[in-house]
Length: 262
Image 1 (cartoon, rainbow, N blue to C red):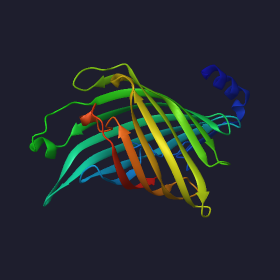
Image 2 (image 1 turned 90 degrees about the vertical axis):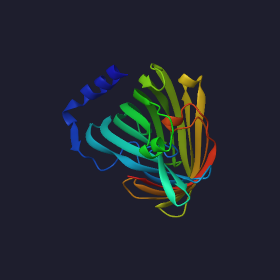
Image 3 (image 1 turned 180 degrees about the vertical axis):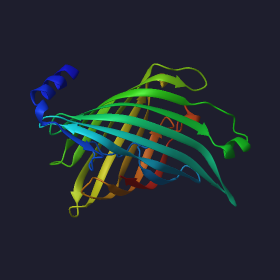
Image 4 (image 1 turned 60 degrees about the vertical axis):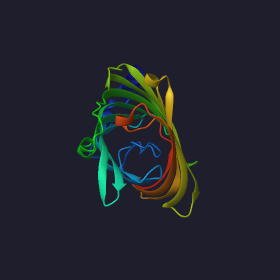
């Protein structure tokens, strides 16, 4: 694949264009990924709990000719799990994510994403004081994804693999894969910027004998010309808990949230 890209590049090397801090992303947020880089506030109905996410991802450099475009992007997010109690509240856990992407757009519909990243997920001080036992969860990974986007049918489909080359929980479970598949489809439009949509995201984990996490989402989004979106949506999530501290337990619940993609 790399040799093919090199040949395509060499055929038109004179017409290279460089852009610092490009305005538009080649690949938007994976809509139903419950750990995507975005701003999130979500009410969970499996207890008096909330999820808040603070983050985003920004393209910082782009190089292209008339056949291929490569965009480099940095992303980071913090997800916290909040539990409301009588007369008080508690931050139960905090999950940190950081990623670097190279998105290679070589066709009207197709993009390849190469990436590397890190996550560490921890019990909060509030929960430690309340008596929860300590548990470590941290991993470093590389990823390879294929993304198909078709504006005619208002859809995006993606799939690929993460290779967790350094993965520590209560023990060392490094060199295991995580497979991720998902889609978004927008069949109904009120006008050029108001949409109804549905989406799903599936993650399959080798370290748990291929147990899965499935999040399905449906709702309303207001979108701008730069693919920035405000979403109001409901979710149903089932399977392995996404919160690292609670790995490998299962969690099945409904939620409602506000999501800001930018």
